[in-house]
Structures are given as structure tokens and as C-alpha cells.
Image (cartoon, rainbow, N blue to C red; front, side, top):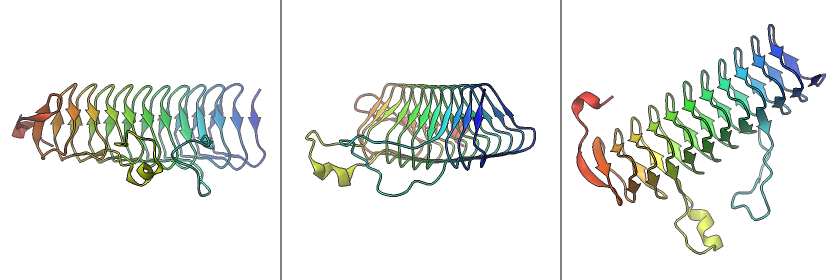
Length: 243
């Protein structure tokens, strides 16, 4: 048995599985497939042709702890899912995110509030995207990676599995750090190898290749290969491998 609020709107040829909840004011487009035990929170917007798989929670209202660094200081707008997206099983997407068309967010991923995701993006299984993150078009983030708050990934970026980004250089837990939190900036076409770590505020330049396992401690130069810990220049990216 499902619960669909009387003010929710469902488009033509949209199907809903068993034991799902669609709250007040939600707008679901045409040809949408909603799986079993899905929760669509109030006022969420879902574009035509999108699939929301079993157990997913979309449009969730964030509830930070009293000790959380980032607090909610304004009303958060509804989640907007573009057309022909695929939302994996048991994925959670928070209110205030904007997801572009034809984007895949795989099983068990989490996308927080105040996130903007471009079109044709892949966010892999068990990836976490924290708040205040921007992800450009046709970017791919592979399984188990962590994109910290206040990061920017531009178009055509590739993030391999288990990459970690960071945003806080302060050892002490003083409030002074709050104004200096800054995530990674990964420029267009850059590629970051598996299990790499990017330190706070680092810029990965256009078409940089970061070798697997690197620890990136300073900004890179465009079209270079870096490796090691700390990561250092190895060579230029071959011309035939550039975008």
C-alpha cells in the first residue's frame, strides 16, 4: 500500500511500486518509474523519464547536529531532479540540491543540500557529496569517493574510486576555522587516480593527471602528471591524451 498526498502531482504513465510515500506538493513528471519503499519528500520536483529505485529517499530535509560546523540559516528550496535521471537503490538526496538531466546517482550514494550537479554526470556507488559542492557536466565520480563541502569539480572531470578531498587545515577546533574552510577545485578535464588525497583549498589544474595513491599538497600545473606523497611533477600529459 502506498501513501500519495492529495496535493502531489503525477504525470502520465508514471508507475509507483509498493509501500512508497509521496508527500505534499511533490511534482513527478511523465514516464517516471518509482520503486518500492521510496520516500519523496514535500515539494520535490522530478523530471520526465526519471527512475527512482527501491528504498531511495529524495528531497530529505537536513537536520544538522548542534555541534555541526555548517548550520541551516535559511529556508532550503525543494530538490530538483532533471529529466531522465537514474537514482539508485537506497540513495539519499537532500532538499536544496539541483540535479541536471540524464545524471546517474548510483546505489547507496548521498548528495547533500546546496549541491549543483550538471547534466550527464555519474556519481558512483556509495559516493558522498557534501553540501555547497558544484559538479560540472559529464563529470564522473567513481565508487566510495568523498567530495567534501565547498568543493568545485568542473566539466569532464574524472574521479577514480576511493578518492578523498578535505577542507579544513586547522588542528585545533577553534571557531576561527569556520571562515577558512575550503574544499578542492578540480578544473576541466582533470583526472584523479584511485585512493588519492587532495588537501584543503588545492586547485587541480586543467587536464592534470594525478597518479593513484598521490597526496596532493599544492596546486598543480595544467596538463602535467603528478605522483607520490607529497605529489610532484613527473612529466607532461601526452598530447594525444588531452581533451
